[in-house]
Image (cartoon, rainbow, N blue to C red; front, side, top):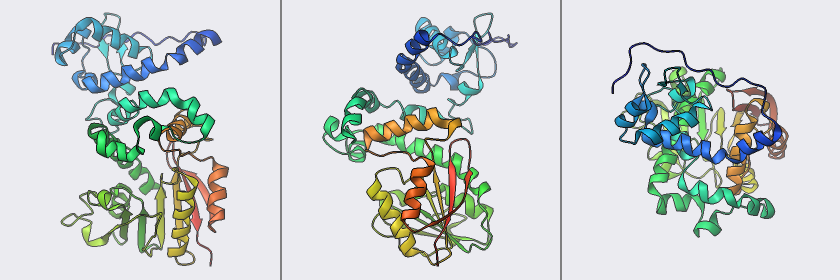
Length: 353
């Protein structure tokens, strides 16, 4: 790919007064165009093709095997949102957001962007009014089966994207969780419904005297983080337990971590919390980590996830009050509530004596 050697200044994003309500609403109802543009750029790997030097739309089109004029139109649209920037000489350069679409970026959101715009989402979103009327998911009616059954039986590529997106999200937030939590006095930490165990691995790396247990469904823990599995550097300090936390938690630990699994439905939440309290000894710590829909800095993000949960599984994200109500109903004593990062909060609880 041919690029020019110097970096012209990008054209500043519009900074005029906020658009009038009618124009803002027009922009919002065309929101699908923005999401589709991000998806197209992610699928075409435009961000990967653009290096540190500016490039023309034609150069980028050649690099990703596309037509130059449609590529320019795509980049122009994305630049309106700060995803790429067009310079005064008509070339394009990276922005902080466009770099997040690169697969090699340490904070890459490429698979998150693909997951949130998978083909099934375009079928489900127009049925949001039905979900609001009924209070339940519309997925069964659309596809004749539950969400996860559909993914793994009928949409293998989407299932792969989902797994990569969840791995990306978990890996990135695991370091934040490990930095936040104080494991003083903890000999055994258990990651309940912990997926592939990225949080657990990060904690064990940070605390070499602590042992860990990972519990999740058999098919999930079979693909646990290689650091935790046999032959991995943390395997000698790790127990991997296949199981369903909604049915039982056969694990005794000093600290239990439950991250982003109390959002499917109230029955699952009640059963999971009841099983933790039943398994834990008095005084054990239980750390609940969740997104909150009443967290002002991230509300546009979390309320969107909340509506998607309504559509696909009939679940819901919590407010601070709703989560506290459920934790107290399970018999947990709530202590400090702290932010983990820009979009997660940790609820520090203990099991009473």
